[in-house]
Length: 210
Image (cartoon, rainbow, N blue to C red; front, side, top):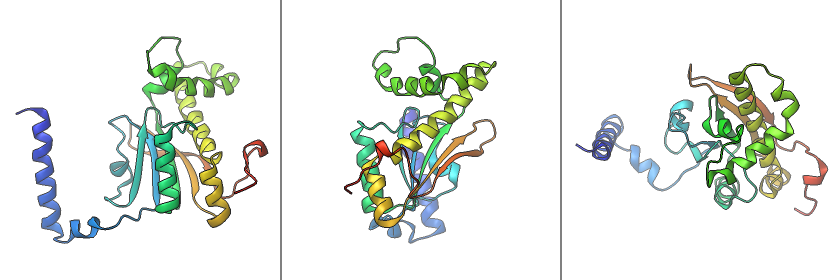
């Protein structure tokens, strides 16, 4: 059996189990989704949003990319963000990184990774912003882990810089923004940064005509 065929078998077993537990399970999911949460996470296969948070289908809206980035020119991310905020009206947005992130680790080197250079350049900027703090840490693993936390913090700030978030804050006083880091070693999430709705940022980033 090919590995992809196993996925199809697992899907059938999962669907059968859900219907056995609750015959109306899928009927409730067909017509509407009303999640309270948008999750912006890393593409790493070891960091599944639903399993980490114990949420069910329909409870969390998910966007994933390398190193959980919020890049102001990324139309994919911005489209997801606008839909989550303006249509689904989520109450919380979580940026979740994870310790040992390969994207952040790559950004802290001078290696040429090809096209991914363009993506991780954004993480290099985070390193530059915080170089004095990070580079004095004596342990390389500890440096990486601190950079992962700082990267999450910067991506939360990048969310707050968008007109999408600022408009929602002005009109509805939601969503709150959260920065978390997941630890692969014990499965626990560490909250590292919070921005309640309406938090003021540097005035150069605040829009006055929303």
